[in-house]
Image 1: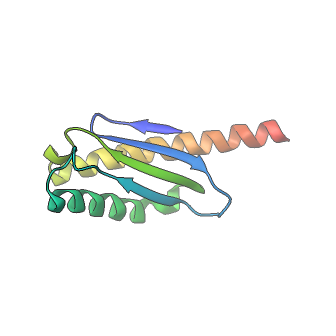
Image 2: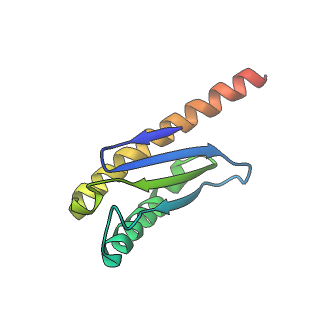
Length: 103
């Protein structure tokens, strides 16, 4: 599954652990200063921590793209909220479709 904005991409694949996991990648090319990379990654992890109860058991990778460093804290939070909503819906649909096909 995939959820995309201009600044962030989230990719998800099912896992058998019973809970979601997250990985964050943000290259020096996208955010030159370590303080910016760390701030953005910290915000992404905090957002995941607050939303993980709504997300099925998937492994999720968050990829930072051009422009992510230019977002204000509020804009970044809005983008993350949108992506978590989109991704959780798509993951739930995937699980319902895959369970229907195996029955």
